[in-house]
Amino acid sequence: MAFDDLYQEIILDHYRNPHNFGEIQRSCTIVEEDNPTCGDQIKLSLWVDENKTIQDIKFSGQGCAISIASASIMTETVKGKTTNEAREIADTIITTMRGEGEPDVLDEYGDLIALKGVIQFPARVKCATLAWHALEEALQKAETGE
Amino acid sequence: MPTQSDIQQAIQALSFNPYTVREDFPILSEIFQRGEKQVPLVYLDNAATTQKPRQVLDTILHYYHHENANVHRGIHTLAERATEKYENARKKVAEFIGAPSEKTIVFTRGTTEAINLVAGSWGRKFLKAGDVVLLSEMEHHSNIIPWQLLSQSIGIELRYIPVTEEGTLVLDQLPQLVDERVKLISVTHMSNVFGTINPVKEIVAFAHERDIPVLVDGAQSAPHMPVNVQELGCDFYAFSGHKMCGPTGIGALYATERWLEEMDPYHGGGEMIRSVWWDRATWNDIPHKFEAGTPNIAGAIAFGAAIDYLQRLGMDAIHQYEQALTRYALERLEDIPGFRIFGQAPERGGVISFYVGNIHPHDVAQFLDADGVAVRAGHHCAQPLMRKLGIPATARASFYFYNTPEEVDILVQSIRKLKEFFGDGF
Ligand SMILES: Cc1ncc(COP(=O)(O)O)c(C=O)c1O
Image (cartoon, rainbow over all chains, first blue to last red; front, top):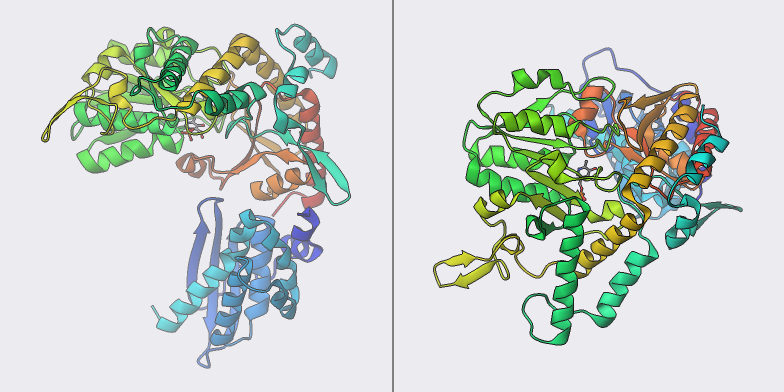
């Protein structure tokens, strides 16, 4: 278990300068997720157009470096994707983080590769998956329109 | 600032040596591999649970090698040995907290079960809808939830003594908070978040003038200072073996003889009965009335061994040393720019909850762990308090008598490095 595997440079970059931080200034889907055991909170705003493409996605909230970085990378990854593609990625990430998938699949998703290190730290998996659970919930909500 | 030589002087004056007692704790020599480097364990999570000395571990092994049998129900030699040791442990617990008799000590799984026992057996019998249980805002969940459960089932209400920013109870408000509906006050002796030592004796005096019984959560006080329940005057006192060198799964409830006699049993089963018919039963004498089923015999005996160990060092000396070590730590930590401490009570023990800049406590704990330093990050089972403080969590370093000034130095160094790594946080 190496500390540097967890706090890779990519993670620290996203943590110091999170991408897509804030709120979308138009009508869109908003969800809030929290992790009461560590007090992490995330608010996600998601704009899906009529072709089921994610036009914009932003997040705000508070959390540790891992959860902030994961949220930042998540928004980068799914922006421009269709809702089905996004759902598939979220599913892959969450299963992989739980240690149920092959970690190398993360290599295909750009900066997501940096989250690979988290798998060795079971106590931190929840931090890394918070944003992805929020995404799943937002997609669901956008779809059903409630 | 107290220097190394000041604290070394304080150590000279003690009746034990914190450096040599470490040899009794095998786990304290644990070394972790960190890449190429090896780092020694610096265990600063003692408020969560403490480490166990060889004397306690040997007692457990010896029990299973030479004494194991069920208690109270056998004629054979082993049954007699086990029963004698088990009951002897109860005497040690009673003596340790100055209880008038071992009849007033009920073995439980720990503080949590002891409080649940009071809520279940005393609360259900003596409280009714509309009655109020007064807690404080610095309680551990284990002194909140049992009362919430009782509130849901029989309709009691909860009130809370507020805490100040510096982590002390606003006792001036007691006269307003306590009216004739208040039927129990249940407060912690020492906060596991702020380290505050509460003036329990005064609270008991105030309550008893109004005939209100008091429960004291002693999870953090019994391990760290001399405690005498008769001097405190409390009706109930709950504590855990694992936070004072004993094993997990064993603790005790002290209650006055009068309450134990009047309370109904908690769990039903073997051992707690005298005579049983198809449709009814009569109860065993106290404290056995509250100990249904086969108890944690090895745990209780090892709890007794832990008490012997602590008594040998001396609770006064333990308290004195931890006070000196905490002062030593506080002054060094406060010197770090951006270091915020939650809990600045004048009367405090060796629990330090903190924030560094805006760095999330998880990141703090993870970084310190890379240097071998074990601290806790989280809400410390005090979610409503965290919400009131407006923070998601804190990092917490907590000491025991085997921690050294050098370990505090490692903590301080690691926190300084952490600031370089994360900046001020997000
Ligand atoms: C103040 C306080 N009360 C109660 C408890 C609960 O103790 P246990 O988990 O041993 O039952 C703790 C320990 O976490 C504590 O610090």
